[in-house]
Length: 396
Ligand code: NAI
Ligand code: NA
Image (cartoon, rainbow, N blue to C red; front, side, top):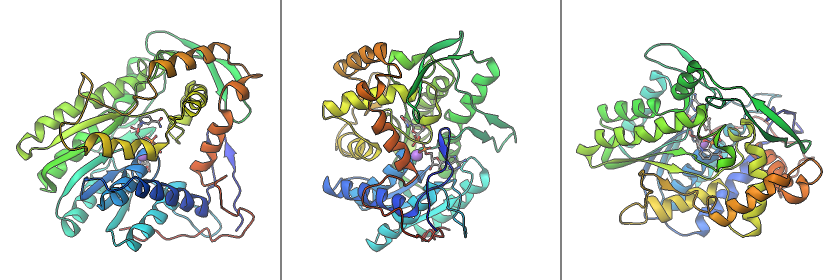
């Protein structure tokens, strides 16, 4: 079939297998171009199919020759219906990995459930014995806690007072004022339950009990801080409470891994266009200004550049892993540079519907958004018929 984008707000209902495959190939080529990393050898990535998790899997495999197991929640392709982008990304990745002689298998299902954790542990036991790195990169609007059976829905709200600021509809370029009413206690608790560290700790507990964590195993989860501009809705909002919890959980997990000589890290990453971030109000406007400034300075990075640098210069640089005073790895260092933030803040003041495509990188935002779904990717012939049914070679 011929597949075209069908956009509804901040999601796209269709995705293109060849565009997704090309994105994955580009990421693989980037990692290879940066040389070998003295990194992990057997890796589990939870949330492995898109965004930072996919980049982590690609960096592990093609930067460090690692065997990888990926866990994700994606829609398979079917006759007449494209699968979700993470399905096609994983198909392309596993094909390339297996061609390169690298072990690559995956599990599609709810990572929050006991069942998927058990299935993953069984697979590791049978095929790899143990893993030396666990990447935790889930982004989800809801989670059913397997112990209580309660389903929690996260909220993206400020805490304490209504937040009003500019936002953009990145399709139309319309800059408007948005007001978001404050969260109640329940919103906060639910968001922490979904995006905090509880499930990360459950994974590590189960894996340790099963003996599938190697001596010196490392685990890393991803966080975000960002500027004062977005603080009320992000870091000091409901999602920020969840990130506080996630960051605190790293210390809890490190304690639990002491006898194995293992360690848990949180890496604070740069703001980027992903399916998760396009859903957060105000963030798309910030990102479009940030992209403009960082591209002009020659320091723009995408998910693969971020994670490749995280592995090469931080996690596996040999020696002490550099962290901030709160123990966090900072790979958002270029985003948070004073000169970058001062310029973004000045542009923010001026930004309106008329000037945004000039002063901001609205086009870059849109292209990245369409790229997530395999569209607008260079070198792909979109007018050509493609087979929408694609197998994931390592799917268990
Ligand atoms: P994403 O939406 O691209 O990836 C989410 C992944 O989680 C996908 O592989 C998806 O299949 C998987 N997933 C979601 N629900 C699942 C479930 N129930 N079971 C199994 N798999 C499930 O998101 P992104 O942006 O890569 O986010 C990953 C982490 O990075 C999050 O913790 C996010 O807060 C963090 N982060 C994101 C930033 C951004 O600007 N996008 C910046 C800094 C941190
Ligand atoms: Na991810």
